[in-house]
Length: 147
Image 1 (cartoon, rainbow, N blue to C red):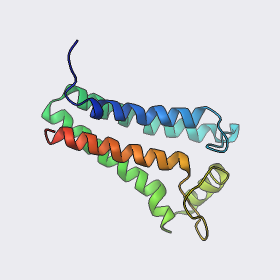
Image 2 (cartoon, rainbow, N blue to C red):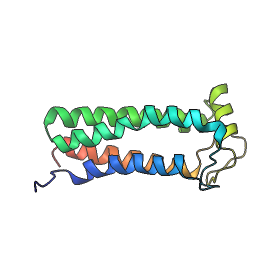
Image 3 (tube, rainbow, N blue to C red):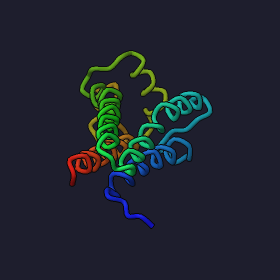
């Protein structure tokens, strides 16, 4: 059986959608707030989000310069999406649609960050997504730089 040159760069992108799938499809209130009304949004989010980490993992597994650079670029897109979806709104730069989505789907979920005066606050579920995104990006960057 061949050895993976970059096991963390392959494994972490697989852990990322596994966490999302668990928290987006298995009811665990108050970690998540799954209701029939938000099924369509969860399906759309899955269709948009899940392919990225799978491609990142594949790029790291192929272990060619071009595939690692592509995987790192995809990590950048995932990180940018997380920042735009959660951290810019938390800083006060949110759209009406983001505020409504948060009110409807995440207002009752666990939060550890201050909520006072904030329309959008990343919940624990998405703090874990953010941590996994950073770890995935760091592992992919390390693999890309030859580490």
